[in-house]
Image 1 (cartoon, one colour):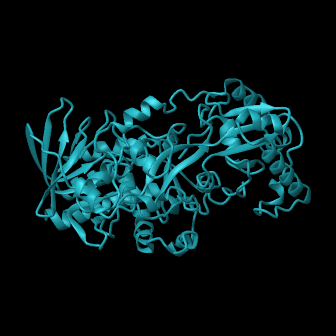
Image 2 (cartoon, one colour):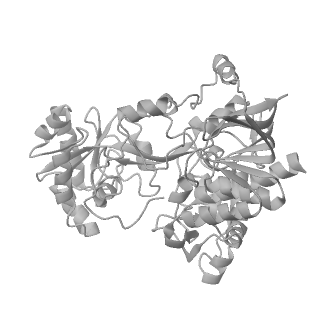
Image 3 (tube, one colour):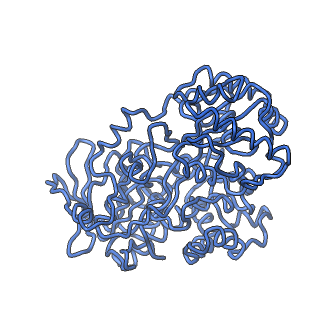
Length: 522
């Protein structure tokens, strides 16, 4: 989820990932998930030898204190399990602190407000299963949706602060089912849940990353963790719940999946290095991460992702997109139904650029009232932080500045303007209202880079949130929740059901804790 009410003229990123920081991330030992060859599997199963200076005996250990981790910890402690919650960072909450709310239907809040009346699971699944060509697990959706209202009420009983507003999340959703946290801040979910977990007897340890699982006779019996002072802690547990938050910040893993992070930006909280994925695969889990999605959006390197300019021009619409060969390659309005489709389209090409003219700027101003758009674009050109933003008085000069074939770009713009004149996109079926010809100088070109929030989906699970093998067999003692085990989507995170991912965080965390308690603790 993104912040709102961002002040204009925030341009330079400052926190953009440099080559040096990418190298540092890639040096985080053992964070990447390997392939599925026999050699890779053998390498994964070569667990390091540790000499623990301390041991701890618990019923359930939860790895990661984000949205799913705190839900799992509260649920486990509430059931009476001796619970340990480990967090690798200095601060708890992970990306959960960046969330603004949570999906639900049939919550008490919704009923009191009288919004979303009559919305059922069949309405929800109709919006999802056809989009994904029926490749999603409808049973996981049903479990999450059916429990969603009760989950909201349960969170409220543990002190989670909701604003009392339930809507369709800025018009992006199809249903009035987005329950806003107070001030749209995920901390109003994370902090009360952590307090409740501790009040129920759970132990929370920060700066204590999980290193490897303890596996005995094919069953997970705990894990090794590194304490703040560098000493090794062996946690003996009846069950481990992985809620580490994905792998989007692991440069090695991302490069393996075709993502060049040189000009990317991390919008999420640091520390999402694929620890859960790595440990689960080492225990025999089915790695489905390559078939799952990211929460990520297009932007231009060095330009503040949240600036009004970025949020205006990188959403598609009345702009022209071309690839490294200066060819138009898609319907630029592809994100009108599902915003994440913008990233899908951009990633189909080696490099993507958006091309604009004064005509397009005027169209954006007319639509949004954003009078300062051209001034902000000119300021970005002056800074040109990554050799990625240029302005010119002709298409030929624009291509030369960006290093594209000038004749090819001129031909592409000529064809595009022809289609705009017809008000019919014969090439890629963009709507007539978004066909705005590029005729009036100045002309602009922005390279489209990628800003990542998180990966969504890692290892396969069943309805109990038990981690399963490629044959569907549970790995005894191992569970995954949140984005580590999210199997609601395939290659795209849809917004038709806004905050369904966060609702799954809570529900899968609770489900994993209940399943672990019933199977391993009782």
